[in-house]
Length: 367
Image 1 (cartoon, rainbow, N blue to C red):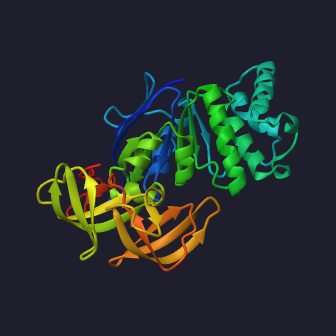
Image 2 (image 1 turned 180 degrees about the horizontal axis):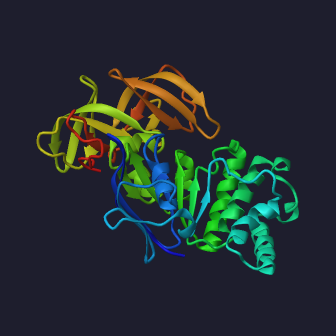
Image 3 (image 1 turned 30 degrees about the horizontal axis):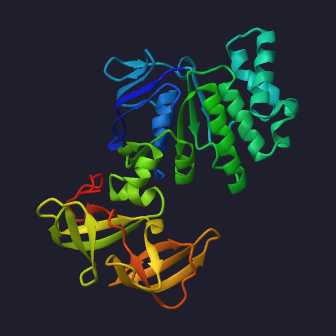
């Protein structure tokens, strides 16, 4: 297996820039997810690595091998890139049996028949389809078809595995099961893997690192815990997991803490860390599960709120609350009755500059 290095990769379609000179590295055996909304450039990046899209500039290398270099005019064809690809549609041949579908990449490489038979049997056993080798795609469930596509992608031991939203066609229960076995297979084979999804739960559950993308650019790269707990921008905070972005105004600072008034005339809460001089309009970023809701004020962080909505979500309740014209969500295991309560904003809430000129990928003014 090999590492993958992307350097200043850009792609233009006429006057439209799809990839904005992005750079990142995937270590050998690492599982890296490209995460972002539709149109952010994640699939284009994956297809560029596979050789199915041609970038305008930059470079892509796999180990010591250059797959693409715009300056040197190197562009290896897909069949010479040694990348296993699983598409969203699976793209398995409907007229071939499961065994023949999996054997196809080996036959293209003119491997001996005995070697093909052994590799197919071993790979189908790996994905749990050994007893279905002679069935055809129309006789399989969606989850089984997905496993056939996976088996076909790994049967010839590629250097890199590229996955383009392979779980999106499965229902919720099958998707959770597929995450487990897909990650297990990747780990057992030690495959360097790049996974594309817009599903935040998949990214958090499966990745060693996540590359969050927006509008053809990279917003943040980090471990799942890092990008969830320490988002670098309001976009990352709002896209990855549920997040409250509460508008506020800085009204004072002392002893390494900052006082922020919620809205224009709400309560003042104190958060850790200073803010740069001149920053007045801010956004407090806090996860719904980080806010405590109670029937009475327990400490100075408590602010009175009006309960606007209640939803029972099984493991917890989600409350929509309002204070000083600002609405936000709170997750709690407690059933709160009545129309009012107290919300306790944690002092570790992240603070972002909310002035119009602040860039979308700004660093928080403090954590």
